[in-house]
Image (cartoon, rainbow, N blue to C red; front, side, top):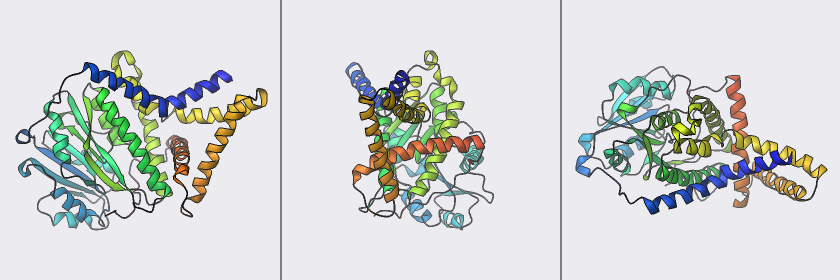
Length: 392
């Protein structure tokens, strides 16, 4: 029991704290021995790019999105902009059609983002494809900073950074999501420097057209699937923090829960799909990064939280001592998380409540996602989450 308990503690610690430390040490060592400079395209050499934005009922924000897209700093003759509207019922496709600078692909039937992208792929001939969400806004240099990486033949995809905009009036959903993405962005930056990013965010990512796979029907997180397929095929996925997509946080913790459960279900689905990546003799650094950054977070780490708590009760009864102290710390942690859950939408709480609450919330979502996946109730069609009003 003690051995299992401490293994569980080790898995939790490594997943959320140990891996970032190990990763940071590894890239520091790599910098000592690696003197190669970046190989970028000059502005005059930039390749033709197709920017694809899949939309569903984004009428409230679609004009701002189009205007933001038209202000991107990229050679106009080399940037093709496509909006893909899928089963919209708010007339947003008519708004897109009013802009002659962009091309509209519209379908009356809603089949989800995967089907929408697969539907238009045959019409996209640019060597570089960039995907972003309709409810995000890109910095002016985003496409330039992404496309410059493709001078190197070994780079198969480039992932941008997701930034969550928050207002002065913080809430648990927006603050938690923002804090999580700062942590996640740091890990992606270090992953990229060590070897490759393990999973791009759909808010902004790009691929070589020749490497773009057709995403199978039923895939829950297509951005992760595409980027991991490219990495599995031996190409590097680069992280570019100077290309970023900004969006507001979820409107409430209930809206954030929908996203987290879906992502968790998709993560567990991905573990099954990418089982071959566990062969460290074939995939080396990719295996190490995938297991440490993704697989443990979607499987053994949440399970270890449950096992450690349960075993701790037994060990307090049988042995006491340090296990009594550890039990007290666990109870305090989850009590703070429970206070955060109760306070959501009712009263403002100190930021010290944020971390335990969002940590527990994310890991609970993994179990909920697993149950939904087992029951076959998680649709591949995104259920649109409400976002807060944009922050000026």
